[in-house]
Amino acid sequence: MLSEDGLKELLEQTIRYQQFQKREAITQEKIIRILIEHVNNQRCSVQLSSQTTDNSTLPIDDVPDVSQIQSLSTPNPNSSEFVHASTSILNYLKTVPPTGASVADICKQFNQFGEKQVQQAVEYLEQDGQIYSTNDRQRYFAAHI
Image: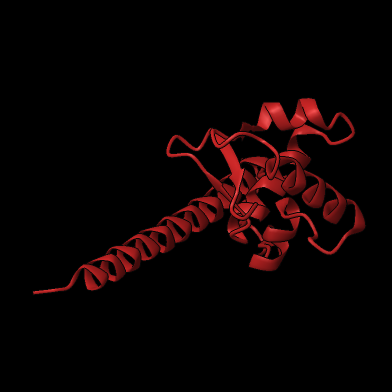
């Protein structure tokens, strides 16, 4: 039989493990979205003529590697603009009520940042563990006040 402290520790470990699993699932989901977005944005410039008799194939060299795909939609977390946006958003989320703030709320607060830039900063801060989302992933709040 576990003591009360043992039960608390077990519960805390279970919660941490569930949070880890959630972050892993979110990361996998983001990778899939990035890949799908990249594939959907690609335009094949090769035109195959029905009059040619040779076997036309797409060149293998045109396939981007993972780092190229990530660079298409992943902001540089070291850029001064991204650091400024992330820091500003984190500081703002430290001041909101426990119910958190939506991306739309954050955009209203910071007119100088575009919605995509806000979304990227929020995703980065969430992955970094500095902010958390509500269960419906609609509102965000700072992890530490």
